[in-house]
Amino acid sequence: MCWSATADLVAGTGITVVGAVCVARVRHLRDLPLAALPLLLGLHQGIESVVWRTGGGTGPATLA
Image 1 (tube, one colour):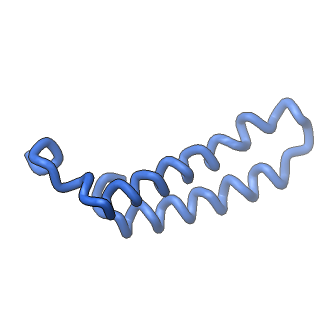
Image 2 (spheres, one colour; image 1 turned 30 degrees about the vertical axis):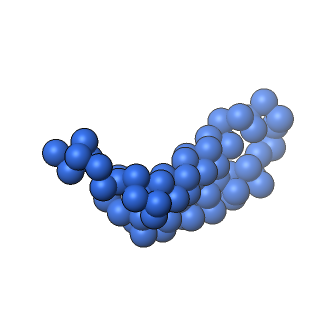
Image 3 (cartoon, helix red, strand yellow; image 1 turned 90 degrees about the horizontal axis):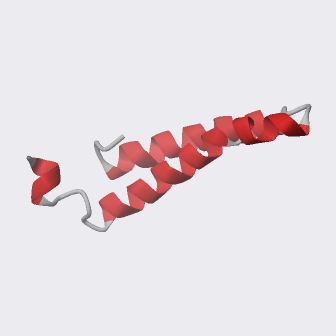
């Protein structure tokens, strides 16, 4: 999201829940990689939240 750590954490949590539901509803094994994509995005959002909390979102490049 790149707005704040809180926004990233909330979005990451919501997307991860959606991903878990998608993976749980997979009927064919070949559909699993596509269903797991929201889990990857949710993980990315969580990592981005940690970066924001450690001061990674306050540099001159992000404020420009």
